[in-house]
View 1: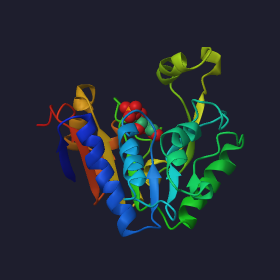
View 2: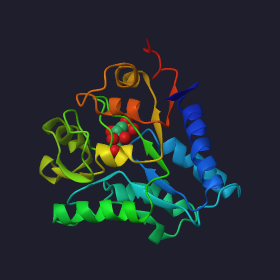
View 3: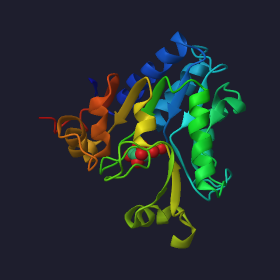
View 4: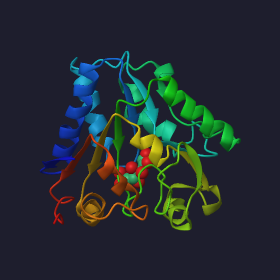
Amino acid sequence: MRIYKAKDYVDMSRKAANIVSAQVIMKPNCVLGLATGSTPIGLYKQLVEWYNKGDLDFSEVMTVNLDEYKGLSRDNDQSYYYFMHQNLFDHVNIPAENTHLPNGMEPDSQKECQEYTNLIQSLGGVDLQLLGIGHNGHIGFNEPGEAFDKQVHCVNLTQSTIEANKRFFASADDVPKQAYTMGIKTIMQAKKILIVASGEDKAEIVRDAFFGPITPKVPASVLQLHNDVTLVADEAALSKLP
Ligand code: F6R
């Protein structure tokens, strides 16, 4: 694994955006696996800036997102569809039909998971998968204990995740209870992986995931088995490395 140390969040965003843009420049019709969450927001902002300067062209890029809440419509401002449009898709020249997320409004989980797995395969797999890391080591919605051999699947959100998300919704009842996510196996099939981490609150999990034992108790630790992983993290997130 390569580790690039950044000074701070802005520097991390720029370094990680450089890796994504190198991918787009070298393979204009590449398949990017994308993530939501707070960490990649600066990276997306940087890509938009470079696009506006004329340095990047997304006209042939294809994207597949890691995950989506089940039961949220696209126009719900908490959906990942909404997030991706707000932070990236609406600001660059990527054709709408090239962007993909699991369909949160499909009630038949088995159907949606199979279709999304088939879609990723039909695109020829993911060239570069972007990931963030949760405080407990989750990647996508793969929480601790999840088997390493899963493809796209439907997960029941833990009570603590539902509690944590409550503030974004009118009431706890409105918080989605399930989500569709690429599984660990899907993520591991990406040709290259770029994982971003920022802040002191991520320091312990960054240490445990990349320098600790490989175990389903820390889902991100599986990335130690992938042969092309780049971690871009700021000093604070790298402050507890052995
Ligand atoms: C996002 C996702 C999540 C986040 C993780 C870290 O699509 O799948 O696994 O990457 O929860 O989130 P932040 O970046 O907000 O700390």
